[in-house]
Amino acid sequence: MNTTSLAGVRVRFCPSPTGTPHVGLIRTALFNWAFARHHGGELVFRIEDTDASRDSEESYAAIIDALNWLGIDWDEGPEVGGDHGPYRQSQRSEIYADVARRLLEAGELYESFSTTEEVDERRKAVGQDTKLGYDNFDRDTTGEQKAAFRAQGREPVLRLRMPDEDITFNDHIRGEVTFKAGSVPDPVLVRANGAPLYTLTNPVDDALMRITHILRGEDLLPSTPRQIALFHALKRIGVAESIPDYAHLPLVRGDGNRKLSKRDPESNLFTYRDRGFLPEGMLNYLALLGWAIADDRDIFSMSEMVQAFDISKVSSNPARFDLKKAEAINATHLRALAQDDFVERTLPYLATAGLVAEKPTDEQRALFTATAPLIQERLVVLSDAVGMVRFLFESEEDFAPEPDSAAKALGEDAKPVLDAAIAALEPLVNWTTPAIEEALKGALIDGLGLKPRKAFAPVRVSVTGRTVSPPLYESMELLGKQRTLTRMRQARNT
Image 1: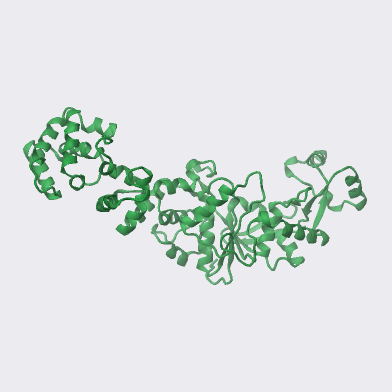
Image 2: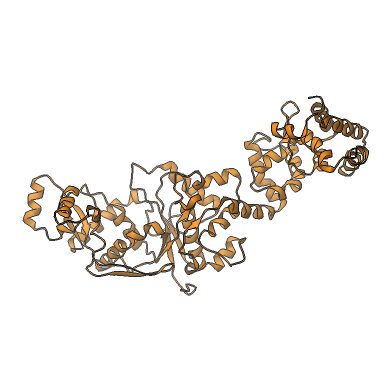
């Protein structure tokens, strides 16, 4: 199914503000955004916040923060406005009450007084499994029976009368899907206290906001026949103009092929931002959770994704979140940054670690700018820079080699190596990378006859504190002669 000829596309992203943004949720936002942008359409962002016991302003702000960080913009919704607001369901109660009234008056909804216990008893009485749920018993309740129930103090829920024929629709990802007549019980749309449920609010908003395509997770597929039935009812009372197309996106799974839930630490989008994933890298990887720009290509920009995105090319198979692949993709985007951009994005991580001021001084900025070309190719995420450059920004009082690195490289065998290195470096007048390299190689490789690994590991750890660091000679030049020799002497005498 090729969707390149679609026109007038309007899609929506409608999260509930509960918890922190989940990578699967943001993948859904990304696919809706790419679909809208590919077709020159519009993305509507609305908040489904009718569950006061679970929804929070903190979570709402986190969703906004996540979208802004990633650059997923929207055409209508909170902070943008539009012609179909308000865009928070908690502010639309009068709209839902009016539509429910009209549906009830038109006979599309009916009052249902049955309790769960009564439904279960009826199922058991005819030998049926209670898991089948509601049995549509109240469809034909008479006015006299309703009056009797009310006299008992019982108030009804409002249920949608499901059609007596199969419900079939063409899913843009899964092809033709059919739900047999009678397989979906009449759903509750309004509670007995008058509160609307998701089964009502979601389709009503889609209808009033003129949504043309619904791209959402596969886990919501069972609710689709109820939505389609309600859309038809909304058309009959003049609220909906048409039935939206559906595309059910594959689930995102974690290790062991389990569904990646909100409780999984690896599902928290901000975990990756805090580590220093780039928006470009995270979006690129999320796009690969169910879609590919080409069979032999994993790296692309969002403009390239928008140009190529075809919802029918999304896989129906579950997508597994692979952290190693996500890191590799992020590292590729990180290496592609212009140096000035790399510096500006990395400095906040150094500030968080206390290595530079929140507003870096000119000296701190200059030192890191000089270091940037030495480390950019070596990083996976921006926060990796902290460990790489800590030795340059720490004072001599605070500096100490990492215990594991010291154990590997600063034993008794290291002392003659450091003695020779100190003796070779002390006379240097020009403290430059070439001069440092020439002096150390002459003293340790030619003079002591050591292999490079044995020769330079003690020097590297004594100076940078780590077995893995930026290039050694360049690091020593940046550190300066006095600080370098002080650290080597301290390591020698430890």
